[in-house]
Length: 341
Image (cartoon, rainbow, N blue to C red; front, side):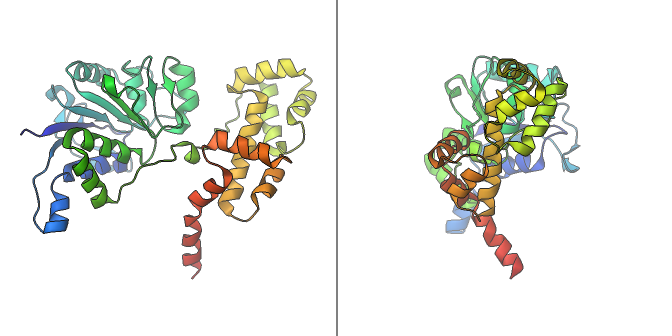
């Protein structure tokens, strides 16, 4: 039975952890588990190739060397193509920066390949037009950029692995180590459930069941398109816990509430109260990570005397209740204790 071919597309702005992590895990399928349990390596189940625009050796992020197996022009068929992360600033869409990749990805998808992306690789798929009218996942930091530049794409900020377009052979993974979820999906798809489980055991991989929201942080850049609103942003960043902060912002700006709301949303993409809520939740997350204050005390500290209201808001924005969020990051405290001896 012929091996399925998975092609990893990388460039100078790809991170080695994603590229080599994917290659290592996918290349090990079928071989390493048998070696570890029976002392006899099996045969590799997948044909994994790294490709680039021209096929020439290059250095990716961190000056790590990459020697591609081929140029994109040499690859005409594959079972799956994965666009590795390709870093782009969170406030700058890579408009028309990937024309060769876009044309090639369109052709590969047209000939029947699954086309997938990891993290900022979704921007390349967006530029290729493959995500139009579809849901997609990417790193949480690119939410505002997608909303502004790719409005036809419904970004799933909570999703680690978005499979809603899998029937159309489009799969997108969120940020960071979401490539692990994508790898296991591809292994299960092409090699079966058993080999996916065995590979997960070899590499100690597990799913991100809580989604991406618990890892997301607020984009608190000050928008300078409206000086009055930027001053409001700066003020509320230090005063979000005060009662009625939106009314106080309006009074300081000399604006009525309706005008403030209109200008605030135009400048930031959020309503004033939504922005305040994000600031409050971000501070609550930091306090929970420090693991010192009671949950009710944290709610009061960020501006909520009603503990139930605080808990509802926190869960809506973070995807977890405060206690579960605290528990998720509690293991890091064990490192601190170990370091102190």
